[in-house]
Amino acid sequence: MNKNENINVFLLMLSVISICGGLFLTNVFIYSPLIGWLVAVFCLIMNFIYKEEQLKYRKRED
Image (cartoon, rainbow, N blue to C red; front, side, top):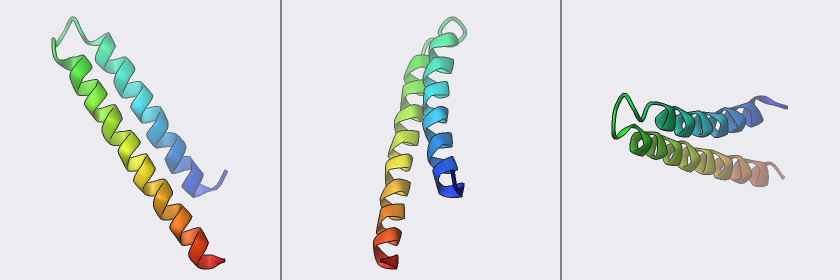
């Protein structure tokens, strides 16, 4: 894997970790699942945007 793929995997894993962390901390803070899901959605959106930029850059190189 190259550097660009590592960033995509990192963002995907961060979204999964934020969901799990939010569910795990339910007893500590009542809104933690909601915050975890919002962080996960943000990470997935950033991953989508980053991947689109990668595809545009590859098309320019061809």
